Image (cartoon, rainbow, N blue to C red; front, side, top):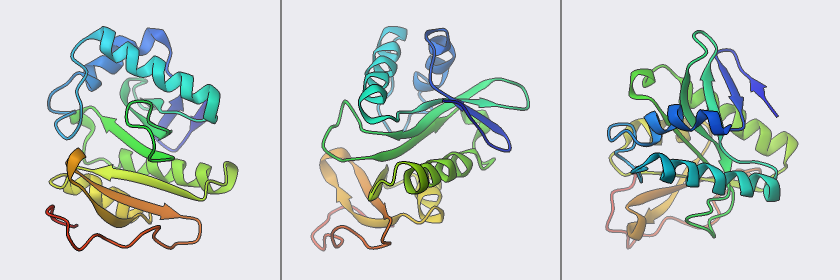
Length: 180
């Protein structure tokens, strides 16, 4: 399924996308807040693992294409993480650094929340942000995600957005990481 927004085309990844996606998923600056793919093979492995989850769950990250120039500029969407299982449905995204600050993450997350609420009827979504990644934290907060707690073993902050608007669990008062 392909989805078009005002400025983006969101589509399932193709094997031919791997080199362009690796230019983002293997870029140290783009991936400085998360796990970087060290090789084309690792990138392909990530994409294939998520595509397996698409067959199970009905959703997985998309290749993100800019309508204006038809260039692959990122990867993201709804997913159940095959590498960090057990967190439930998540929203995640990564964009080429030359596309940061242009509202593409907010546009993508808006599609994700609409799909989760109106089509998939997911009771909740989660999102993670590195404590120092202020921009990503703001994207999640603007989309209605609330801070839940720090996850020190992942060096991430956990955010949640539910259909009912309530947090699943209260923020941890013992956290050693800075809340938003």
